[in-house]
Image (cartoon, chains in turn cyan, red, brown, green):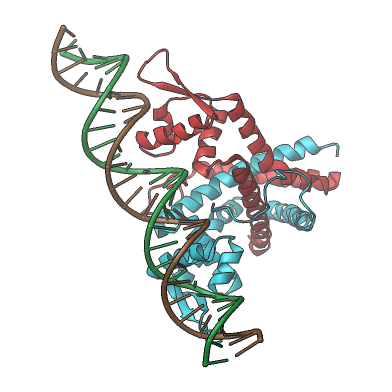
Amino acid sequence: MTNAPLFTQSIRAWMDVFMHRSMRGWGLFARSTGLSMPQFSLMMQLHYRGACGMSEISERFEVTPAAASQLVDKLVQNGFIVREEDPSDRRAKLLNLTDKGKETILQGIEERYRWVDQLAERLTDEERVQISKALDIMTRAAEGLESEPARQGHPSVKSTYSIHK
Amino acid sequence: MTNAPLFTQSIRAWMDVFMHRSMRGWGLFARSTGLSMPQFSLMMQLHYRGACGMSEISERFEVTPAAASQLVDKLVQNGFIVREEDPSDRRAKLLNLTDKGKETILQGIEERYRWVDQLAERLTDEERVQISKALDIMTRAAEGLESEPARQGHPSVKSTYSIHK
DNA sequence: GCATATATTTAAGCACGCTTAAATAAAAAG
DNA sequence: CTTTTTATTTAAGCGTGCTTAAATATATGC
């Protein structure tokens, strides 16, 4: 660990640039679609994990079923998702992206990655290979970290993935 | 540009991991301090750019002076910042972080970087050097990008750095 | 010195996401 | 078949951040 400061400096500089650009990208997307962060997250869940019921949404986002229902309501009203009856349980609903919803999400994902694609264009082949390898190492290391318990932080606070509170 | 797909794949994988961890870190911090995103951003501005008046806040965040005043008010009430009179212009106010505010912001910055510090510990010296170089290349490339006009996106939408709308 | 411009605050009102409590409907249990 | 549990919705209410419009205080221009 002789070069920790160097590494730390590099990654923090990159993080700052990255966060800045990402936030800007998100801002543009949010304005053009009128989607809020929770709304976008909900649609992302449907995109990546497929159709699901209200209760699943409520659990994944750690909000009450009422909150989930209301959030979904706005997305339905704006034509991004549909609320269908679950054939196997008529109490439950099945949430699905509409075509408009799918399109919007794909566009959002594109938006998110666009600037790094542009960044890639400014690099040489060698640089791309070099960076590719470096990122893969970090991704793998981060995934290892994932499985371990958090070692520090705010122990009084319940861990959560949800930001929307 | 023969290896664009490889690069794209690596960076997207890293971005996904990174965003996920960062959001989690922010969530923990937000809960433990009770700070909202706009409140935190405002304090970060004071931390990095130093004391300033209401009008500057209002301009930087692209909100009305009224909104800035109200936002500041909550931070003052919670003891994170102070509103002092500008000696050179008694209409204006000077906003400053309190000790509590400074401490909280430093803690927030730490929180933000903590998991990558942990990640760094799982790497060898060589890997750290390798990654360091790669990240520096990207940071420099990104800064070059910064100065250029955006080439695509949502042209109907006014560009902004603010997310809080 | 008085009119105007500037810096900020206060008040009223809106949209959002959240909560709790109560309502509805259908499945499951007895 | 009635009771209870489960899935979801609706209603009321709260805190946040935002806006516009009006109020206050100070600086500036003529």
